[in-house]
Image 1 (cartoon, rainbow, N blue to C red):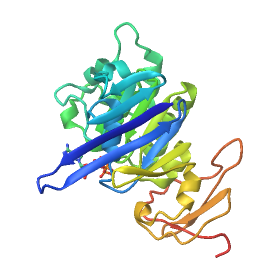
Image 2: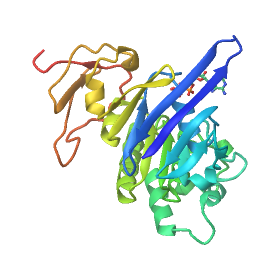
Image 3: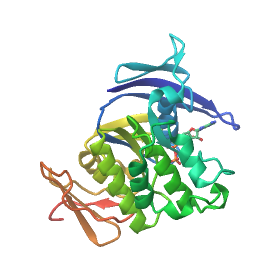
Length: 282
Ligand SMILES: Nc1ncnc2c1ncn2[C@@H]1O[C@H](COP(=O)(O)OP(=O)(O)OP(=O)(O)O)[C@@H](O)[C@H]1O
């Protein structure tokens, strides 16, 4: 488990105070996700777990290791948390080329060249190695940053909208890559995504976040079946059966099914920003 009980306050220019409070236990060795509207607090939550933003109060204990404890004055540096991470504002070094940025993530003497080649081929960045990062497109930077986050086969993988600037073809290639690496190396992953199919396909547990707190959590299909009008930014008009959720936006109609072996039998790769969930038979 990653046991989290943290608080953070921001005072903005217009004097409005934003309060974030997160309490949860995130399972290890599986993919989890954070879902909610813009400004809900997802990125800040993930940055506090990563160590990029310091909580005001509370504690984070990951697999028995104390990452943060305000009472005991513990705040483990990022490098000691074994995390591969990607955030929306690229943390790549703009003046270095792609190769140098990737080398930066390697621990000296521990390079796994075959693994790196697999990542670079799937992300289609092998031909960019000598390019300066500042000259790359948003999608190219995102692919380099994703490869960099995976290079170390990290124990924890925290990704903030990692596929948002990618076209559909490469997006599905990289969704599959992250899915297979998470399983192969038993990583504990936390993904922020606005894409419901991605959340359902990639993650076992979703945390629904609204106004700086977790309002519900659980199996993604179960959570999306519930009526979270504000979270889904769309009209939710019903429930489906236990094993099926039907979504359309605006069409065609998409049916996501699951069975015991493979949680999702069929999923299509539409980007959904607004959805309607309808009762079977409606
Ligand atoms: N450094 C900061 N100073 C002041 N306010 C901040 C700071 N960082 C975040 N906030 C505020 O905290 C709230 C949560 O922001 P956060 O970026 O975590 O939301 P989010 O759910 O990730 O949104 P999005 O989906 O748009 O990325 C917002 O109101 C934001 O303006």
